[in-house]
Each structure stands twice: as structure tokens, then as C-alpha cells.
Length: 260
Image (cartoon, rainbow, N blue to C red; front, side, top):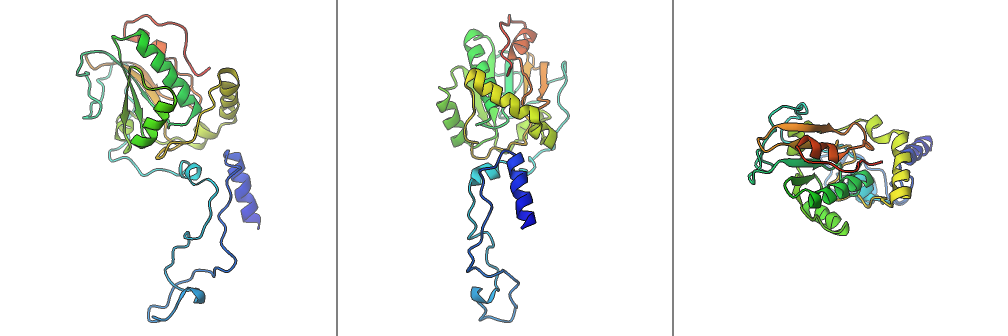
């Protein structure tokens, strides 16, 4: 009983207070190992290699799924590139860019995150004002979830959206898995409330494949493939001023578009 109460408290602190704990039907026996030589044993005798999760009812499966630590990317997480470094290139994200333009790239935490939504909308606005810059948003959610999220926000406009489900691009740019302080700091919840209250950006359902522990980031890369600005997000609510990246590429920035 106490362990169940403790679990409920932990879920509430993690923002999952509406998640129902898994429950087994009372008629379901405990699952124990089946005797290898007993071919007549059945579930009513408490044996067998039955799936212990088969009859569990979860309140919000997708929300819980997004809290799980994801499998590691296919390549090691590198050190984040510094200003002046050569940009890491990949078949899905090549530098220098093929079209010869400088690039501003954001790596989304996950689709559905309100802070991610704010940054994406700011990039989309900048993409209309600076056609000489190639704007790119990278998502690790599934293609379907990413497309639905972008569509719900009114489209990508002049932003190219790249899907990186394996998170190999994230790892290439030094963006790994965060810690509890990064995600669950009390300030994050307060700033999330302010973002919704002041600007109406409340976020949405976590996109399929999304992981709340994934670190986001933003980088500006010039036409020669050199990093001119950027780095990983220091916290979930980190203020990313994309105009600073635009200025670092030699273009005039305007009003700040950070999260706050």
C-alpha cells in the first residue's frame, strides 16, 4: 500500500497526476515460473510465461512512454561543437548546405512541448523575413507525429523539417539525454504557465516517439560550413534568441524571440 502511495506522489510531482496506476484484475493469479516438465499447467494454477502486462490498464500510455529513457542512438554522443568548429555533416543534414546558403538549425526537444512550439514559431517567422538563410528544424518524433504537429501549427512555411527518429543527428551535435534537474526544475513549470498565460502557447499532446529527456539546441552555420553560434539548451525553458543566430550569420536581427 505504501509503495503504491509513494508511486502516486512521484507521478504527481512529475506532472503525471492524472495517470492511473496499473491494476490487475482480482481474479488474476500471481504469475510464477512454470515447472518445465508439467505440460498440463495452466494460468489458473499460477504458472506459465504469461505476459504480466497483458491485463494492465494504463491511464495515459503515451504520456508514460515519453518519460522512459530511450535506446541509445546508433552513434556516440559527441561533444557539442564550438563557435569556429567545422559543422558535423550527415547524409540527412549536410554542411556546407547544398544550396549554398547559411543555415539556422534547431533541434526540437519533442513535438508537443510548449517551449519547443514557441521556438519553432519564432523560427518560422524569421524564415519569412530572411529568405537568404536556410532554416531547418530537426525532430526525433515519428514522421506522422511530426507532420501532424507542424500542420496543427499552421504549416512549416519556409522551414525545412528533418525527421531523425534514431537521434543520430542529435548525437552528432552533442545533444544527448538530460537529467532530472534539466527537466523537472520547479522553475520550468512556472515558466510554462507564464508562456501559456501570456502568449497562449500551452503545448499539445506528446508526439509519438517523443522523449521528454532529449536535450534540444540551436546552431547557426555559415555558407562555408563553420559554426558561428549556438549550443545545447541548458534547461527545458532555456531562452533561445534565434535573432542572435541570424546576426552571427551577418544578417540584421530584430526583436528578441526567446521563450520569454
